Length: 149
Image (cartoon, rainbow, N blue to C red; front, side, top):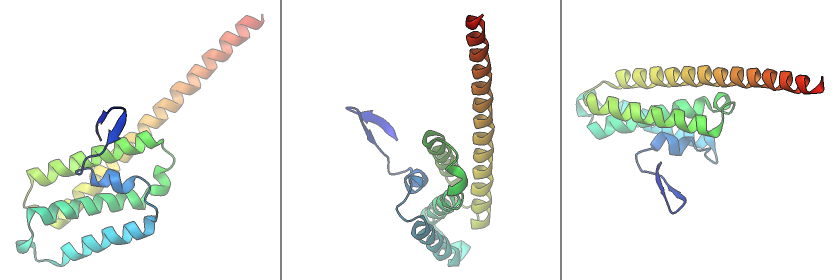
């Protein structure tokens, strides 16, 4: 997302994974579409692949990862999921820019590894928030009990 203009939000064209993740109307159809992109680009010989092909492949793999893990991602808040996909988008864009001749296997491996790392980070952060909330509830209860006396 780009900074809001007059209170509205404006999305950028580079946030492909975030856009696809934003609860598509038919996740199975979107997943099939992404898989078709992966398959089409995967059929091309490595020597014929362009930088654009590699970027499309990386975006499709990233979007596919998000769609495959949608049931698990639904446990997180919308902002956490959006943050995760934005970080994944940025990481994938950086990787494809720094490695314009990376093999499709390397791209797929990198995207999957980064997605797992982002998921782990989100789980750890969520657990930390849950623990902090539990501690605050305990402290609040102690304060309430103190007023009763």
